[in-house]
Length: 425
Image (cartoon, rainbow, N blue to C red; front, side, top):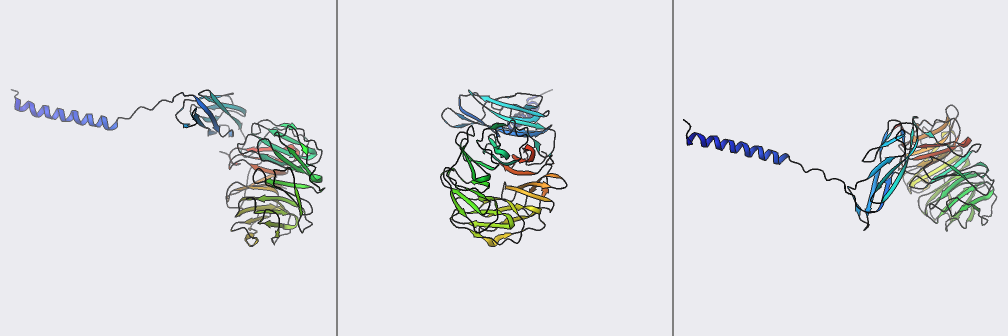
């Protein structure tokens, strides 16, 4: 017969088991995810604004949103769409997937605001050839604004072409000159300078819709490079030791002739005071006062140095003919320059270079056996790795908007692009 004495222990055990189960459930219970919300926005921007994928490759686009009070807001419901799902698809979180070769726009919309990113999908490894309005021209200089959408390329016969979609399409601009143009730089989306042969300096204040010759430049020397460090301070260099300087954004230039008859091919400044110029015969000059005075550097080479790039005041890279490489790593004075051995390879005739980090950089030119040369260094120029350029022509200019997105230009109207540092993603 069941008694109270036997029922109570059983009841206590059941209650204990129930409490244990209840505690376990409570311990492992998680809050349901908070669904994205739709709120009025003051802005929605995507990054990056342009990207390159290989077929099957993926890349994440990030949307940044601000509410109508100007505060950063997250967990916003965003509608993502692709203009052509056969080329690229996009997930609900902004993840891109390359589906087939071609170019397409991807759009994001929320809270009454929208933005877009341009995606190029290619089946090729390495660098991708972009279609450009450049047939018959040898291209020498290239520049892109930081977002990587707006770009300009200059070349022979006064050729200037412009893109507003990271190179998905290029359109010719009227340069108002027939002189060969060798370099270009923009200090804003609208204001730019292009330099070329015969002392040519062309200015624009409307993004290149129209260009006018700067008559304040009193020289007939060929101008081979131009660089700015901010909206007002810039320098250009050319033949017979010519250096030009502007402190008003390129409206007026002052002239200085260095104590050399060699052509100066490239200039690089880390700030408004410290800079380098390089040229034929292993020429290197430095300045600590913005170019008011220059001092020569005794670099032990007679090879032509064609390009120089500075990441900051203490890290400089120069490249030239027969694979010559010069570096300045430890400071700003001439004593720190050296020639790393082995160099970048004697078969590589290097034209220009760019550092995209303290030690990471690129050089472009021509290799007699391989054609167009694109080289990459991860140690400041001590060693180099060849990349697949997918072209046989000489490459003359390089520009990276960041460490991954770059453009290279060369003979025959060639424009190359990478969205992944020149490596297959």
